[in-house]
Image 1 (spheres, rainbow, N blue to C red):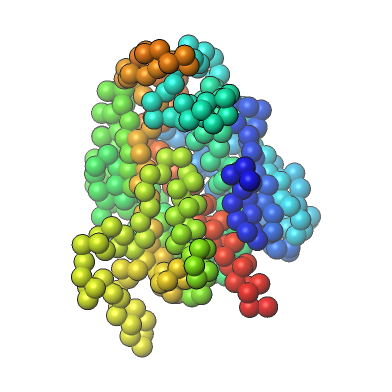
Image 2: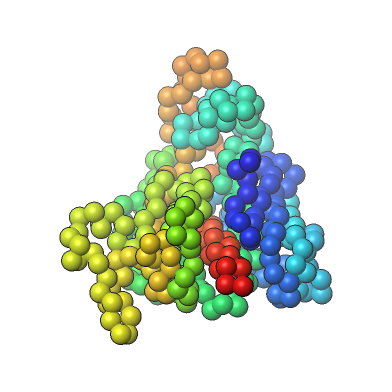
Amino acid sequence: MSGNTIGTIFSVTTWGESHGKAIGAIVDGCPPNIALTEADIQRELDRRRPGRGVAGSPRREEDRVEILSGTFEGKTAGTPISLIIHNTDAASGDYAEIRDLFRPGHGDITYQKKYGIRDHRGGGRASGRETAARVAAGAVARKILDRAGIDIVACTRELGGIRAEGEAQNQIENNTLFCPDDEAARKMKTRIEEARAAGDSLGGIVEILVRGCPAGLGEPVFDKIDADLAKALMGIGTVKGVEIGAGFEAARMSGSVCNDPITPNGFATNNAGGILAGITSGGEIVIRAACKPIASIGREQETVDIHGKAATISVGGRHDVCVIPRIIPVCEAMVAITLADHLLRQTVNRE
């Protein structure tokens, strides 16, 4: 196993490098006769593409997707769906001066240790550029979830230490940070500009909500739905932590507080985040993903070169200040892919 594929029945394999000719995904296991066009996928890609928003990179990629296979007359054919996105604005020369230096916070040194070779141009497969392929595949998954009435929405819950209040669905289209709190969004933008001026970067927390998910998804032991959701989100390069429901706060509660009372009308609270014993309960699924600061920063840092000699590095080029908000559709996509896989697995289990 190469680690480039996720899913059991509905599977996604991504391919391509940040500064290669193209990136893309192969989606297998999608049921036939689902309406799917390039426009359906493009809507999600437009939310992620670079060159937008106060925190974004100046790289100008249109991220135009092409469906190479797997559809016929605007519907899925039940065969593998091949998606391609051409790289049109790669500036590989930006990395020439640092090609022999390991960038702190990046996968340069671990890729070199694992493979004995690495693509220094933007990080190759380790680049955030790869996530565009995930978003494209996630758009296919969402078409499956739409038929089941499952809706996924994510928002910026925290950025640069500034926390947003309010429900995830509220106001997120009012600002470029997908933040449910306009006042917090204004403070976040100021914090981003301060970090940019200092040659630094910021981290944040994304909250993902799933509504309309039926009870019964997930397997009882090793393929628990929360375990698979955590794996999917932790598979995003920037994510360093995932919590569900009350998350780490549950460790500070007593059982009488943490347990969600069950009433004839459903659960009275939702500390479990919509999942019990690794199986969905039918309640709202609540997930939060902690995203580390962008590793490529202009401030000088200590490092070593490929020969182990001490050096310093300042990373130039075109980089985001924060992965938020561009990471939000990526998180939604990984949740959609995981849920679509488990939804189809449950269908097989009941046949």
